[in-house]
Image (cartoon, rainbow, N blue to C red; front, side, top):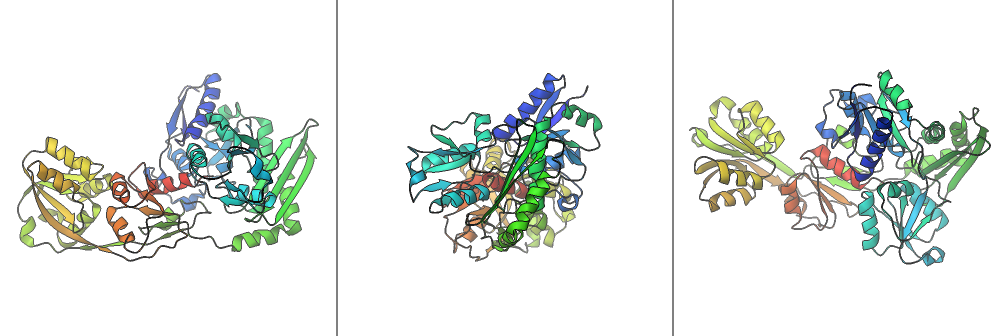
Amino acid sequence: MSKVIRLGTRDSQLALWQANTVKDQLKALGHKVQVVTIKSAGDLNLEQPLYEIGISGVFTKALDIAMLNGDIDIAVHSMKDVPTALPKGIVQAAVLERANFLDILAFKDNEEFLGQKEAIIATGSLRRKAQWLNRYPTHTVVDLRGNINSRMQKLYDNNWNGAIFAAAGLERIGLEHEHTIGLTWMVPAPAQGAIMVAALEADEELRAICAEINHERTAICVKQEREFLRILEGGCSAPIGALTYINNEDEVVIKGVLLTIDGTKKLEASITAKLGKHENLGLDCANSILARGGKRLMSELQSVPLSTQLFSTKKLTEDQLRLFPLNIQVKSEDFIKINPTRIAPNALKNELENVIITSKNAVESLLTHTTASQLKFRKIYCVGRKTKRLIEQNFGAVTYTASSAKKLAEHLVEFMEGTEVTYLCGNLRLDDLPNKLREHNITVHEIETYKTKYSKIEVADSVEGVLFFSPSAIDSYLQINNPNKIAYCIGETTATHARKSFKDVRVAKMPSVESVIDLVNENYSA
Protein backbone atom coordinates (compact mmCIF):
# COMPACT_ATOMS: atom_id res chain seq x y z
CA MET A 1 0.00 0.00 0.00
CA SER A 2 1.44 3.36 -1.03
CA LYS A 3 -0.42 5.54 1.47
CA VAL A 4 0.43 5.72 5.17
CA ILE A 5 -1.78 3.49 7.32
CA ARG A 6 -3.13 5.49 10.27
CA LEU A 7 -3.16 3.14 13.25
CA GLY A 8 -5.41 4.27 16.11
CA THR A 9 -4.82 3.45 19.76
CA ARG A 10 -5.57 4.63 23.27
CA ASP A 11 -2.69 6.52 24.87
CA SER A 12 -1.88 4.34 27.89
CA GLN A 13 1.57 2.77 28.15
CA LEU A 14 0.19 -0.71 27.50
CA ALA A 15 -1.99 0.41 24.57
CA LEU A 16 0.97 2.16 22.93
CA TRP A 17 3.12 -0.96 23.35
CA GLN A 18 0.46 -2.99 21.56
CA ALA A 19 0.06 -0.38 18.81
CA ASN A 20 3.80 -0.23 18.17
CA THR A 21 3.96 -4.02 18.02
CA VAL A 22 1.37 -4.03 15.23
CA LYS A 23 3.15 -1.10 13.56
CA ASP A 24 6.48 -2.97 13.58
CA GLN A 25 4.92 -6.08 12.04
CA LEU A 26 3.25 -4.09 9.26
CA LYS A 27 6.44 -2.09 8.57
CA ALA A 28 8.39 -5.35 8.31
CA LEU A 29 6.08 -6.24 5.42
CA GLY A 30 6.89 -2.96 3.68
CA HIS A 31 3.93 -0.82 4.73
CA LYS A 32 4.07 2.76 6.03
CA VAL A 33 2.34 3.19 9.39
CA GLN A 34 1.61 6.19 11.60
CA VAL A 35 0.37 5.75 15.20
CA VAL A 36 -2.54 8.06 16.09
CA THR A 37 -3.57 8.36 19.75
CA ILE A 38 -7.26 8.93 20.47
CA LYS A 39 -7.84 10.76 23.74
CA SER A 40 -11.57 11.22 24.15
CA ALA A 41 -14.83 10.21 22.55
CA GLY A 42 -16.09 13.68 23.43
CA ASP A 43 -13.68 15.28 20.95
CA LEU A 44 -14.91 13.20 18.02
CA ASN A 45 -17.89 14.05 15.87
CA LEU A 46 -20.43 11.47 14.82
CA GLU A 47 -23.81 12.56 13.55
CA GLN A 48 -25.48 9.26 14.35
CA PRO A 49 -26.09 8.53 18.07
CA LEU A 50 -23.87 5.85 19.56
CA TYR A 51 -26.73 3.54 20.47
CA GLU A 52 -27.95 3.47 16.87
CA ILE A 53 -24.70 1.99 15.57
CA GLY A 54 -24.41 -0.52 18.41
CA ILE A 55 -21.16 0.64 20.02
CA SER A 56 -20.99 -0.83 23.53
CA GLY A 57 -17.32 -1.33 24.43
CA VAL A 58 -16.29 1.36 26.84
CA PHE A 59 -12.57 0.89 26.09
CA THR A 60 -12.96 0.59 22.30
CA LYS A 61 -15.70 3.12 21.63
CA ALA A 62 -13.57 6.18 20.87
CA LEU A 63 -11.46 4.22 18.38
CA ASP A 64 -14.57 2.81 16.71
CA ILE A 65 -15.94 6.31 16.22
CA ALA A 66 -12.61 7.59 14.91
CA MET A 67 -12.53 4.81 12.34
CA LEU A 68 -16.12 5.39 11.22
CA ASN A 69 -15.29 9.11 10.97
CA GLY A 70 -12.31 8.41 8.73
CA ASP A 71 -9.79 9.77 11.24
CA ILE A 72 -7.91 6.44 11.42
CA ASP A 73 -7.65 3.42 9.11
CA ILE A 74 -7.24 0.59 11.63
CA ALA A 75 -7.46 0.27 15.42
CA VAL A 76 -5.54 -1.89 17.88
CA HIS A 77 -7.21 -3.27 21.00
CA SER A 78 -6.62 -5.60 23.92
CA MET A 79 -8.99 -8.23 22.60
CA LYS A 80 -10.55 -8.99 25.98
CA ASP A 81 -11.90 -5.39 25.96
CA VAL A 82 -13.65 -5.76 22.60
CA PRO A 83 -17.44 -6.39 22.68
CA THR A 84 -18.55 -9.69 21.16
CA ALA A 85 -20.73 -7.72 18.71
CA LEU A 86 -18.68 -5.21 16.72
CA PRO A 87 -20.25 -1.98 15.44
CA LYS A 88 -21.84 -2.14 12.00
CA GLY A 89 -19.17 -1.58 9.36
CA ILE A 90 -16.21 -2.66 11.52
CA VAL A 91 -14.67 -6.14 11.42
CA GLN A 92 -11.86 -8.10 13.01
CA ALA A 93 -8.97 -7.87 10.54
CA ALA A 94 -6.24 -9.70 12.46
CA VAL A 95 -5.29 -11.28 15.77
CA LEU A 96 -1.65 -11.39 16.77
CA GLU A 97 -0.07 -14.48 18.29
CA ARG A 98 -1.28 -14.72 21.85
CA ALA A 99 1.04 -13.81 24.72
CA ASN A 100 0.91 -15.21 28.24
CA PHE A 101 -2.79 -15.67 29.03
CA LEU A 102 -2.37 -16.36 32.76
CA ASP A 103 -3.41 -14.22 35.68
CA ILE A 104 -0.60 -13.78 38.18
CA LEU A 105 -0.49 -12.93 41.87
CA ALA A 106 2.05 -10.30 42.92
CA PHE A 107 2.64 -10.57 46.67
CA LYS A 108 4.71 -9.11 49.49
CA ASP A 109 7.22 -10.85 51.73
CA ASN A 110 6.21 -14.53 51.44
CA GLU A 111 3.47 -16.96 50.39
CA GLU A 112 2.45 -18.08 53.88
CA PHE A 113 -0.86 -16.22 53.69
CA LEU A 114 -2.08 -18.72 51.07
CA GLY A 115 -2.34 -21.31 53.80
CA GLN A 116 -3.85 -18.97 56.38
CA LYS A 117 -7.49 -18.23 57.13
CA GLU A 118 -7.16 -14.48 56.76
CA ALA A 119 -5.54 -12.57 53.93
CA ILE A 120 -6.29 -9.50 51.83
CA ILE A 121 -6.12 -9.76 48.03
CA ALA A 122 -6.74 -6.84 45.67
CA THR A 123 -8.36 -6.95 42.24
CA GLY A 124 -10.79 -4.85 40.23
CA SER A 125 -12.08 -7.87 38.26
CA LEU A 126 -15.27 -9.69 39.28
CA ARG A 127 -13.99 -12.80 37.50
CA ARG A 128 -10.76 -12.84 39.51
CA LYS A 129 -12.57 -12.01 42.74
CA ALA A 130 -15.11 -14.81 42.30
CA GLN A 131 -12.48 -17.44 41.48
CA TRP A 132 -10.25 -16.36 44.35
CA LEU A 133 -13.11 -16.54 46.87
CA ASN A 134 -14.16 -19.90 45.48
CA ARG A 135 -10.66 -21.23 46.28
CA TYR A 136 -10.03 -19.14 49.43
CA PRO A 137 -13.51 -18.41 50.87
CA THR A 138 -12.25 -16.89 54.14
CA HIS A 139 -9.99 -14.32 52.47
CA THR A 140 -10.99 -10.70 51.91
CA VAL A 141 -10.92 -9.31 48.38
CA VAL A 142 -10.65 -5.52 48.08
CA ASP A 143 -11.19 -3.34 45.04
CA LEU A 144 -8.19 -2.30 42.96
CA ARG A 145 -8.54 0.24 40.14
CA GLY A 146 -6.31 2.26 37.84
CA ASN A 147 -3.74 1.50 35.16
CA ILE A 148 -1.11 -1.20 35.68
CA ASN A 149 1.49 1.14 37.13
CA SER A 150 -0.87 2.75 39.66
CA ARG A 151 -2.28 -0.63 40.69
CA MET A 152 1.20 -1.97 41.38
CA GLN A 153 2.02 1.13 43.41
CA LYS A 154 -1.15 0.61 45.47
CA LEU A 155 0.05 -2.89 46.32
CA TYR A 156 3.23 -1.38 47.77
CA ASP A 157 1.33 1.36 49.60
CA ASN A 158 -1.39 -0.74 51.28
CA ASN A 159 -1.49 -3.53 53.84
CA TRP A 160 -2.58 -6.11 51.28
CA ASN A 161 -1.01 -9.53 50.98
CA GLY A 162 -1.18 -9.53 47.21
CA ALA A 163 -2.83 -8.25 44.04
CA ILE A 164 -3.86 -10.02 40.83
CA PHE A 165 -2.72 -8.86 37.36
CA ALA A 166 -2.78 -10.12 33.78
CA ALA A 167 0.67 -11.55 33.13
CA ALA A 168 0.73 -10.27 29.54
CA GLY A 169 0.18 -6.66 30.61
CA LEU A 170 3.07 -6.70 33.08
CA GLU A 171 5.41 -8.44 30.66
CA ARG A 172 4.62 -6.08 27.78
CA ILE A 173 5.56 -2.92 29.66
CA GLY A 174 8.42 -4.53 31.55
CA LEU A 175 6.85 -4.01 34.96
CA GLU A 176 8.29 -6.69 37.20
CA HIS A 177 7.48 -7.47 40.81
CA GLU A 178 9.90 -9.25 43.10
CA HIS A 179 7.43 -11.98 44.12
CA THR A 180 4.86 -13.48 41.72
CA ILE A 181 2.92 -16.72 41.30
CA GLY A 182 1.25 -17.83 38.08
CA LEU A 183 -2.38 -18.67 38.87
CA THR A 184 -2.63 -21.70 36.61
CA TRP A 185 -5.89 -22.75 38.27
CA MET A 186 -7.64 -19.46 37.46
CA VAL A 187 -9.51 -19.41 34.13
CA PRO A 188 -8.61 -16.17 32.31
CA ALA A 189 -10.96 -13.69 30.66
CA PRO A 190 -12.00 -14.65 27.13
CA ALA A 191 -9.24 -13.55 24.71
CA GLN A 192 -6.91 -12.46 27.53
CA GLY A 193 -3.37 -11.95 26.21
CA ALA A 194 -4.49 -11.43 22.61
CA ILE A 195 -4.16 -8.24 20.53
CA MET A 196 -6.81 -7.52 17.89
CA VAL A 197 -6.66 -5.26 14.83
CA ALA A 198 -9.98 -3.85 13.62
CA ALA A 199 -10.66 -2.34 10.20
CA LEU A 200 -13.58 -1.10 8.11
CA GLU A 201 -15.47 -3.93 6.46
CA ALA A 202 -15.58 -2.02 3.17
CA ASP A 203 -11.79 -1.53 3.00
CA GLU A 204 -10.79 -4.77 1.32
CA GLU A 205 -7.20 -3.64 0.65
CA LEU A 206 -6.49 -2.88 4.32
CA ARG A 207 -8.18 -6.07 5.46
CA ALA A 208 -5.92 -8.04 3.11
CA ILE A 209 -2.85 -6.27 4.51
CA CYS A 210 -3.88 -6.98 8.11
CA ALA A 211 -4.51 -10.62 7.24
CA GLU A 212 -0.76 -10.94 6.60
CA ILE A 213 -0.06 -10.55 10.35
CA ASN A 214 -2.99 -12.71 11.51
CA HIS A 215 -2.03 -15.69 13.69
CA GLU A 216 -4.46 -18.39 12.64
CA ARG A 217 -4.26 -20.63 15.71
CA THR A 218 -4.76 -17.73 18.10
CA ALA A 219 -7.71 -16.51 16.01
CA ILE A 220 -9.32 -19.97 16.21
CA CYS A 221 -8.96 -20.09 19.99
CA VAL A 222 -10.19 -16.60 20.86
CA LYS A 223 -13.16 -16.98 18.51
CA GLN A 224 -14.44 -19.91 20.59
CA GLU A 225 -13.85 -18.07 23.87
CA ARG A 226 -15.76 -15.02 22.66
CA GLU A 227 -18.59 -17.22 21.40
CA PHE A 228 -18.78 -18.81 24.86
CA LEU A 229 -19.00 -15.31 26.37
CA ARG A 230 -21.63 -14.19 23.85
CA ILE A 231 -23.93 -17.14 24.51
CA LEU A 232 -23.79 -16.60 28.27
CA GLU A 233 -24.57 -12.91 27.64
CA GLY A 234 -21.96 -11.94 30.18
CA GLY A 235 -20.19 -8.63 30.43
CA CYS A 236 -18.19 -6.83 33.09
CA SER A 237 -20.92 -7.61 35.64
CA ALA A 238 -20.67 -11.41 35.36
CA PRO A 239 -17.72 -13.56 36.52
CA ILE A 240 -17.04 -15.52 33.31
CA GLY A 241 -13.79 -17.12 32.23
CA ALA A 242 -12.82 -19.11 29.14
CA LEU A 243 -9.63 -20.57 27.70
CA THR A 244 -9.13 -22.42 24.43
CA TYR A 245 -5.92 -24.04 23.19
CA ILE A 246 -4.80 -26.46 20.47
CA ASN A 247 -2.86 -29.44 21.81
CA ASN A 248 -0.13 -31.52 20.17
CA GLU A 249 -2.69 -33.85 18.61
CA ASP A 250 -4.36 -30.96 16.79
CA GLU A 251 -7.32 -31.05 19.11
CA VAL A 252 -9.06 -27.83 20.10
CA VAL A 253 -9.84 -27.78 23.84
CA ILE A 254 -12.06 -25.22 25.56
CA LYS A 255 -12.65 -24.75 29.27
CA GLY A 256 -15.31 -22.33 30.49
CA VAL A 257 -16.43 -21.20 33.92
CA LEU A 258 -19.31 -19.19 35.37
CA LEU A 259 -19.50 -18.16 39.03
CA THR A 260 -21.52 -16.05 41.40
CA ILE A 261 -19.81 -12.84 42.45
CA ASP A 262 -19.08 -14.17 45.95
CA GLY A 263 -17.61 -17.38 44.53
CA THR A 264 -19.98 -19.66 46.44
CA LYS A 265 -21.38 -21.20 43.25
CA LYS A 266 -19.29 -22.35 40.32
CA LEU A 267 -20.18 -24.09 37.07
CA GLU A 268 -17.54 -25.24 34.62
CA ALA A 269 -17.28 -27.31 31.47
CA SER A 270 -14.54 -28.60 29.20
CA ILE A 271 -15.02 -29.87 25.63
CA THR A 272 -12.59 -31.15 22.99
CA ALA A 273 -12.94 -31.47 19.20
CA LYS A 274 -10.61 -32.18 16.31
CA LEU A 275 -9.21 -29.12 14.51
CA GLY A 276 -11.54 -28.54 11.58
CA LYS A 277 -14.53 -29.85 13.50
CA HIS A 278 -14.27 -27.31 16.30
CA GLU A 279 -16.59 -24.56 15.06
CA ASN A 280 -19.30 -25.16 17.70
CA LEU A 281 -17.02 -25.65 20.72
CA GLY A 282 -17.79 -22.28 22.33
CA LEU A 283 -21.49 -22.74 21.76
CA ASP A 284 -21.50 -26.30 23.11
CA CYS A 285 -19.44 -25.35 26.19
CA ALA A 286 -21.80 -22.49 27.03
CA ASN A 287 -24.90 -24.63 26.50
CA SER A 288 -23.44 -27.31 28.76
CA ILE A 289 -23.12 -24.78 31.58
CA LEU A 290 -26.59 -23.34 30.92
CA ALA A 291 -28.14 -26.81 30.99
CA ARG A 292 -26.57 -27.59 34.38
CA GLY A 293 -27.89 -24.58 36.28
CA GLY A 294 -26.28 -21.76 34.34
CA LYS A 295 -29.61 -20.15 33.42
CA ARG A 296 -30.58 -19.94 37.07
CA LEU A 297 -27.16 -18.64 38.07
CA MET A 298 -27.23 -15.94 35.34
CA SER A 299 -30.69 -14.96 36.53
CA GLU A 300 -29.34 -14.60 40.06
CA LEU A 301 -26.47 -12.45 38.83
CA GLN A 302 -28.80 -10.15 36.91
CA SER A 303 -31.05 -9.71 39.94
CA VAL A 304 -28.22 -8.63 42.26
CA PRO A 305 -28.56 -4.86 42.72
CA LEU A 306 -25.38 -2.89 42.11
CA SER A 307 -24.52 -0.29 44.69
CA THR A 308 -24.07 3.22 43.36
CA GLN A 309 -20.37 3.60 42.75
CA LEU A 310 -20.31 7.10 41.27
CA PHE A 311 -22.26 10.34 41.58
CA SER A 312 -22.14 13.16 39.05
CA THR A 313 -22.80 16.70 40.29
CA LYS A 314 -24.14 17.52 36.83
CA LYS A 315 -27.18 15.82 35.32
CA LEU A 316 -25.86 13.50 32.60
CA THR A 317 -27.63 12.73 29.33
CA GLU A 318 -28.58 9.19 28.34
CA ASP A 319 -25.80 9.14 25.74
CA GLN A 320 -23.27 10.20 28.39
CA LEU A 321 -24.48 7.51 30.79
CA ARG A 322 -23.99 4.91 28.06
CA LEU A 323 -20.28 5.75 28.04
CA PHE A 324 -19.87 3.96 31.39
CA PRO A 325 -19.39 0.16 31.47
CA LEU A 326 -22.20 -2.05 32.72
CA ASN A 327 -20.62 -2.72 36.11
CA ILE A 328 -20.54 0.96 37.06
CA GLN A 329 -23.79 2.42 38.31
CA VAL A 330 -23.95 6.19 38.14
CA LYS A 331 -26.40 8.65 39.64
CA SER A 332 -26.45 12.26 38.53
CA GLU A 333 -28.14 15.40 39.79
CA ASP A 334 -27.55 19.10 39.28
CA PHE A 335 -25.84 20.28 42.47
CA ILE A 336 -26.09 23.90 41.41
CA LYS A 337 -28.94 25.88 39.88
CA ILE A 338 -28.26 28.91 37.67
CA ASN A 339 -30.69 31.84 37.74
CA PRO A 340 -30.05 34.76 35.36
CA THR A 341 -29.81 38.18 37.00
CA ARG A 342 -31.74 41.07 35.50
CA ILE A 343 -29.03 43.60 34.69
CA ALA A 344 -29.72 47.32 34.90
CA PRO A 345 -30.20 48.70 31.33
CA ASN A 346 -27.49 51.36 31.70
CA ALA A 347 -24.88 48.82 32.90
CA LEU A 348 -24.29 47.57 29.35
CA LYS A 349 -25.35 50.71 27.51
CA ASN A 350 -21.89 51.98 26.62
CA GLU A 351 -19.27 50.30 24.50
CA LEU A 352 -17.03 48.09 26.66
CA GLU A 353 -13.33 47.88 25.79
CA ASN A 354 -12.15 44.72 27.58
CA VAL A 355 -14.81 42.16 28.56
CA ILE A 356 -14.05 39.01 30.55
CA ILE A 357 -16.38 35.97 30.46
CA THR A 358 -15.29 32.83 32.30
CA SER A 359 -18.30 30.55 31.86
CA LYS A 360 -21.12 29.57 29.53
CA ASN A 361 -23.53 30.50 32.33
CA ALA A 362 -22.63 34.17 31.90
CA VAL A 363 -23.26 34.05 28.15
CA GLU A 364 -26.58 32.24 28.48
CA SER A 365 -27.71 34.56 31.26
CA LEU A 366 -26.86 37.66 29.19
CA LEU A 367 -28.96 36.35 26.32
CA THR A 368 -31.92 35.82 28.65
CA HIS A 369 -32.51 39.53 29.14
CA THR A 370 -30.64 41.14 26.22
CA THR A 371 -29.92 40.54 22.56
CA ALA A 372 -26.52 40.37 20.93
CA SER A 373 -27.26 43.50 18.93
CA GLN A 374 -27.72 45.52 22.14
CA LEU A 375 -24.24 44.62 23.42
CA LYS A 376 -21.14 46.52 22.35
CA PHE A 377 -18.02 44.54 23.21
CA ARG A 378 -14.75 45.60 21.54
CA LYS A 379 -12.49 42.87 22.91
CA ILE A 380 -13.68 39.69 24.59
CA TYR A 381 -11.47 37.44 26.72
CA CYS A 382 -12.82 34.08 27.93
CA VAL A 383 -12.06 30.75 29.60
CA GLY A 384 -12.76 27.44 27.87
CA ARG A 385 -13.41 26.29 24.32
CA LYS A 386 -17.14 25.80 24.82
CA THR A 387 -17.51 29.30 26.23
CA LYS A 388 -15.53 30.64 23.25
CA ARG A 389 -17.74 28.79 20.82
CA LEU A 390 -20.92 30.13 22.43
CA ILE A 391 -19.56 33.71 22.47
CA GLU A 392 -18.60 33.58 18.81
CA GLN A 393 -22.00 32.22 17.88
CA ASN A 394 -23.74 35.15 19.58
CA PHE A 395 -21.42 38.14 20.12
CA GLY A 396 -18.54 37.92 17.68
CA ALA A 397 -14.82 37.10 17.70
CA VAL A 398 -12.92 36.29 20.89
CA THR A 399 -9.61 38.10 21.33
CA TYR A 400 -8.02 35.44 23.56
CA THR A 401 -9.09 32.15 25.17
CA ALA A 402 -7.35 30.51 28.15
CA SER A 403 -7.84 27.10 29.72
CA SER A 404 -8.27 28.55 33.24
CA ALA A 405 -9.06 31.83 34.97
CA LYS A 406 -5.52 31.93 36.38
CA LYS A 407 -3.95 31.64 32.91
CA LEU A 408 -6.31 34.26 31.53
CA ALA A 409 -5.30 36.69 34.29
CA GLU A 410 -1.62 36.10 33.50
CA HIS A 411 -2.24 36.84 29.82
CA LEU A 412 -4.19 40.02 30.55
CA VAL A 413 -1.49 41.36 32.84
CA GLU A 414 1.13 40.77 30.18
CA PHE A 415 -0.62 41.68 26.94
CA MET A 416 -3.91 43.56 27.45
CA GLU A 417 -4.17 47.13 26.23
CA GLY A 418 -5.77 49.51 28.73
CA THR A 419 -6.15 49.46 32.50
CA GLU A 420 -9.81 48.54 32.93
CA VAL A 421 -11.87 45.39 32.39
CA THR A 422 -15.53 44.48 32.75
CA TYR A 423 -15.96 41.08 34.36
CA LEU A 424 -19.32 39.39 33.59
CA CYS A 425 -19.57 36.84 36.37
CA GLY A 426 -21.79 35.03 38.87
CA ASN A 427 -22.40 35.77 42.51
CA LEU A 428 -20.03 32.99 43.63
CA ARG A 429 -17.11 33.66 41.33
CA LEU A 430 -13.59 32.77 42.52
CA ASP A 431 -11.20 35.54 43.58
CA ASP A 432 -8.14 34.40 41.62
CA LEU A 433 -8.72 36.40 38.44
CA PRO A 434 -9.90 39.76 39.85
CA ASN A 435 -7.29 39.69 42.61
CA LYS A 436 -4.49 39.04 40.14
CA LEU A 437 -5.61 41.93 37.95
CA ARG A 438 -5.97 44.37 40.86
CA GLU A 439 -2.50 43.44 42.08
CA HIS A 440 -1.24 44.88 38.78
CA ASN A 441 -3.34 48.04 39.01
CA ILE A 442 -6.01 46.95 36.57
CA THR A 443 -9.47 48.20 37.53
CA VAL A 444 -12.10 45.45 37.54
CA HIS A 445 -15.77 46.39 37.03
CA GLU A 446 -17.87 43.38 38.02
CA ILE A 447 -21.37 42.86 36.62
CA GLU A 448 -23.32 40.00 38.15
CA THR A 449 -25.06 38.21 35.29
CA TYR A 450 -26.34 35.16 37.19
CA LYS A 451 -26.79 33.70 40.65
CA THR A 452 -25.60 30.24 41.60
CA LYS A 453 -27.78 28.40 44.11
CA TYR A 454 -26.68 25.27 45.92
CA SER A 455 -28.79 22.11 46.09
CA LYS A 456 -28.55 20.00 49.24
CA ILE A 457 -28.25 16.51 47.77
CA GLU A 458 -27.10 13.67 50.00
CA VAL A 459 -24.63 11.17 48.52
CA ALA A 460 -24.60 7.63 49.94
CA ASP A 461 -21.55 6.33 51.83
CA SER A 462 -21.25 3.51 49.27
CA VAL A 463 -20.35 5.98 46.52
CA GLU A 464 -16.65 5.71 45.65
CA GLY A 465 -16.18 8.78 43.47
CA VAL A 466 -17.84 12.08 42.60
CA LEU A 467 -17.66 13.89 39.25
CA PHE A 468 -17.19 17.67 39.57
CA PHE A 469 -17.56 20.22 36.77
CA SER A 470 -17.08 23.49 38.68
CA PRO A 471 -15.78 24.82 42.02
CA SER A 472 -19.37 25.80 42.91
CA ALA A 473 -20.48 22.17 42.59
CA ILE A 474 -17.77 21.20 45.08
CA ASP A 475 -19.03 23.78 47.60
CA SER A 476 -22.58 22.56 47.08
CA TYR A 477 -21.52 18.94 47.63
CA LEU A 478 -19.63 19.79 50.83
CA GLN A 479 -22.72 21.32 52.45
CA ILE A 480 -23.90 17.93 53.73
CA ASN A 481 -21.38 15.37 52.36
CA ASN A 482 -17.90 14.25 53.40
CA PRO A 483 -14.82 14.58 51.15
CA ASN A 484 -13.86 10.94 51.70
CA LYS A 485 -14.23 9.94 48.05
CA ILE A 486 -12.30 10.30 44.80
CA ALA A 487 -12.89 13.68 43.15
CA TYR A 488 -12.92 13.47 39.33
CA CYS A 489 -12.55 17.04 38.03
CA ILE A 490 -13.15 18.60 34.61
CA GLY A 491 -10.18 20.95 34.80
CA GLU A 492 -7.36 22.32 36.90
CA THR A 493 -9.41 25.20 38.36
CA THR A 494 -11.98 22.75 39.71
CA ALA A 495 -9.23 20.37 40.84
CA THR A 496 -7.38 23.12 42.73
CA HIS A 497 -10.57 23.88 44.64
CA ALA A 498 -11.18 20.18 45.30
CA ARG A 499 -7.69 19.68 46.78
CA LYS A 500 -8.62 21.97 49.65
CA SER A 501 -10.93 19.21 50.94
CA PHE A 502 -10.35 15.95 49.05
CA LYS A 503 -7.26 13.78 49.43
CA ASP A 504 -7.65 11.97 46.10
CA VAL A 505 -8.20 14.42 43.21
CA ARG A 506 -7.94 13.45 39.53
CA VAL A 507 -8.10 15.76 36.52
CA ALA A 508 -9.49 15.01 33.05
CA LYS A 509 -7.21 15.41 30.04
CA MET A 510 -9.72 17.59 28.22
CA PRO A 511 -12.28 20.10 29.61
CA SER A 512 -15.37 18.12 28.60
CA VAL A 513 -17.92 15.88 30.30
CA GLU A 514 -16.87 12.99 28.09
CA SER A 515 -13.24 13.39 29.09
CA VAL A 516 -14.19 13.21 32.77
CA ILE A 517 -16.06 9.98 31.99
CA ASP A 518 -12.97 8.68 30.18
CA LEU A 519 -10.94 9.47 33.31
CA VAL A 520 -13.35 7.44 35.43
CA ASN A 521 -13.36 4.51 33.01
CA GLU A 522 -9.56 4.38 32.93
CA ASN A 523 -9.58 4.11 36.71
CA TYR A 524 -12.16 1.31 36.62
CA SER A 525 -10.49 -0.76 33.90
CA ALA A 526 -9.61 -4.14 35.29
